[in-house]
Image (cartoon, rainbow, N blue to C red; front, side, top):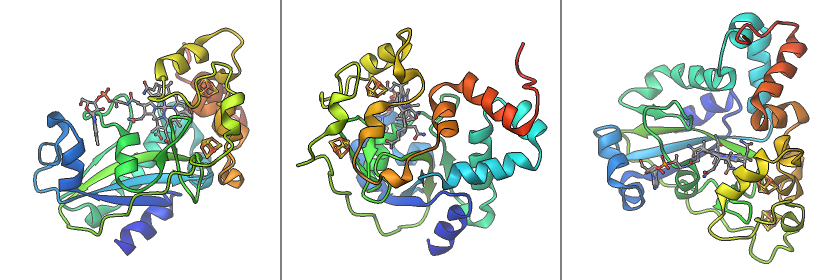
Length: 244
Ligand code: B12
Ligand code: SF4
Ligand code: SF4
């Protein structure tokens, strides 16, 4: 596990937790039980990127060949992450990696998975919030592995007793509503002129680990992919070859 953690950290995949297969199976529906995702699974290693390190490594990787890795690539950040995971080589023997993308062949609820693997607790924002990284981490992969690894203990809920400055800045006033009304969040992001088209103000207001907040380029890339791509292409001086 130490070697796996160290190799993942090389790409900024620096927030890693483990849930045992039996514990995962107690929460996951029949279609995605561990044995049907990958026969022989005994643990699931959930891999996240805390703070800006993964994004910075991604920019270094793009810089080496911006035409192939950005201008001609529909999902450059996902490709970078998947490439690093594939590069784990022997460490992945007998494992299956599942990614949290829309085009993945298995769709897992990574918020639930991240919580089970002790990476954070669902917050007033709907997102997981953790002690080391606040809400500033992304879930990047789930490795279904044939080893019985020590599970990570549950994370602490940081919203309990917090004055919740996140609630008042949400234009849709949905922060704090349980269960989190994702459909209202989507609707607000689609409203003309909404500040949520370029970032989540509630996430930015979270008082936990603000030093790990993403920069404007990364925030734009996550919230407004076309504009994020345009900014990245401008930064690397390439023409987006996927534009019509
Ligand atoms: C779609 C999506 C959105 C949509 C809508 C969310 C929704 N829930 O409908 C919108 C656009 C609103 C959105 C917004 C944001 N999102 Co979003 N989003 C997602 C995405 C891609 C899928 C969410 C989803 O639909 N989950 C349920 C789907 C996968 O499952 P399903 O097909 O319906 O059902 C199957 C499974 O759920 C399974 N299942 C059921 N129960 C269980 C239990 C277990 C244990 C398992 C394994 C499976 C399982 O069974 C079902 C049938 O097979 C996730 C990534 C992911 N794969 O989880 C990110 C994700 C949740 N988003 C994330 C983020 C960061 C954001 C934003 C901040 C914007 C951004 N990208 O920067 C904002 C959040 C605003 C806020 N409140 O703070 C992060 C959260 C990170 C964190 N720290 O918690 C995620 C995890 C992406 C990532 N790679 O990190 N998001
Ligand atoms: S993206 Fe906008 S609507 Fe959704 S939680 Fe954040 S501030 Fe509220
Ligand atoms: S500001 Fe406080 S209540 Fe809001 S998400 Fe962060 S920890 Fe939770």
